Image 1 (cartoon, one colour):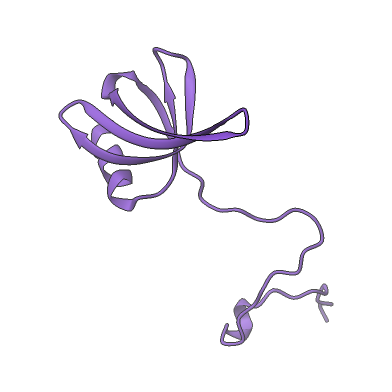
Image 2: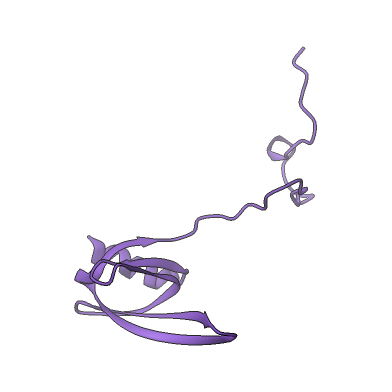
Amino acid sequence: MLHRKIYQLCCDGREVWIFLRDQQRWIERARILDIEGDLVTVRYETEEEEEICSWEEMIRLESIGSVMQKLATVPRGDVEPLVSEDCPEAERIRNYPENPD
């Protein structure tokens, strides 16, 4: 089942976070490039001493303990969300509380 899910994430091309059980470390913001047998090829970047390094790593499927992906990002603080003018009135976010009558 993990193999099918990783294949789906590979097809989607989205960034994922992968936990490697045998090394007890996370690979952050990786893209799954390929799956061949029990080998998963990922590409990711790290920042080390003012350098950005790009890595491509082959991981055994059995080493993967967890895979996460970010679903959404919402800014913190008092930020006004952008609303499209063609958004239906019923779906618009209001800035003021409605008073029930």
